[in-house]
Length: 138
Image (cartoon, rainbow, N blue to C red; front, side, top):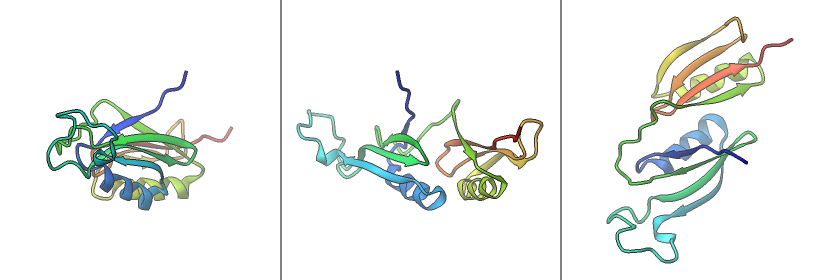
């Protein structure tokens, strides 16, 4: 069994992918637009969304995530879930936290805790929640 995260950006997937490429070095491994669908059924593609992203895959480090524009509502909702990034050291954690927080909202400043030399939570400009942690040395 294998579980993957699938993010729905409501019409902003291409913008999100570009942001993650710049901010944290994501690499897009696959992207398919609604207009690329081989046999679209009536009503499957909303008028004006032909060039939106039907399906994409991207990697952050060793992790692959998937994303779509979904219903192209313009209102992505990422409530109740966060993605966690384990940074190799404090400078990397600070860089990633700052990059993801650009245009977003800090939920927990990046601080030293009892379980990590640095831990923080941020929602990026799309509303995706991120937890940044540096693994505690034994």
